[in-house]
Length: 578
Image 1 (tube, rainbow, N blue to C red):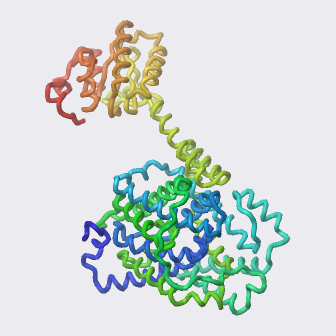
Image 2 (image 1 turned 90 degrees about the vertical axis):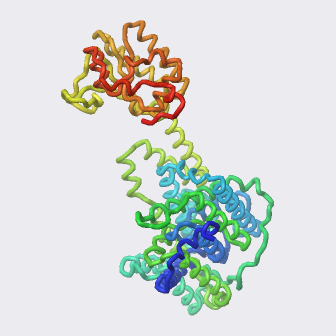
């Protein structure tokens, strides 16, 4: 059972005390889920009840299949904006076709995540660089906040990017609803001050209840305040999603599946502690979130993943296991069964949900991290800023794709033109360091010593040769007779590099310059000794240290342990180790 349902492993040694803590935590998470899920459903262009549906079945499945006891699964702001940006080009938000597409999307996301998990593709999370995630999440936060301005000022406008929305809001300034503006101010003041002075208070839920009470008592709907006054009663019915337009949904499904998994894994890793008896397993997490979405699609849910804010509250409120999530799911199910008629008498002002959404996603805009990245690494800052700006202009999917392309291009550039350093002797010791980083280094005029900091292969071997010849030309005024290649940071060497290296060694021999290699690790030595360089790279040209090579060049001394670098039949048949 533990193998089939890894979540059960957390129940070993479960006690009454653990149950009490999980129940208290479940109540806290439910208080956050109710307003957040309804708000994020509106952000995704769906009815508010879809958010509640997404909080029932998916968390239960994750509780059985997940490997983390520190995350809260449910609707997430970033997923919602991805859904809206991806589906709004296929159907108008709020229409039946749009709702059908959202449920089908949930099914596709679940299938993709589950399949990737079984294929052990959990490592894909490593390919989305932090600058891309930072730029995307910060831009998404702004997009979400601007999408809610209409509810904050009481006007309805067409969609667009934040700049287009800003223009439309300004043009509609004469139609802003004054009572809605007052409620907006009161709502923000309450959320900010309660968070500062009473951080453990369920502020979003209290604002939601207060807004409903005010709307019912003062008839705010009759005074022009936009409200939600109908939530279908009962649990969602089991129904198979429509399989139409599957091909059209593939791009957004891949994006939501990948970003949902990356967000979930990043939260798992951030919450882990060294003494945890179980650590999150990437492939199992893919399966768990995937099955949660797959099952959710059968009960009218939209895609879910882990939430940063709720996961933090999950831990802070004392949750020990995913039993806490089961409790919160049961509470929301009871609300749908028995309390939805309340919305007819006490409708929910949309402005309250908008305030909750804006406050919730404001933390996703990480200005401090942007500033730190600018000081630390300008190229990565450029990747982040390009992702941020293009996401704002063209949309979330296009911004992510461009950011990933930029990251890959940077990796290709770095591998094609890696760091190379000319080395000099520090004082009179055994250390050799970069001559441009240290002032007290001794450079031998007749020996060129250099280091190459990357695997040597077809993509960068031409740069290797180009840089080597440039350094040799700079020594035109001195009788250079030796070149020492320090290979300690070269993890591998391919056939293209070996062929080029053979040409270089032959060319240098014709000029009276001998080529030596030092500090080569086992796999590199294996490649050299099993190639056409075997006869050239003999015991008098391959050394364990730079000092050994220099002693041989200057005094003809061969170290006593030099035999360790030679090969034999065993070394060529078995993998070597450094």
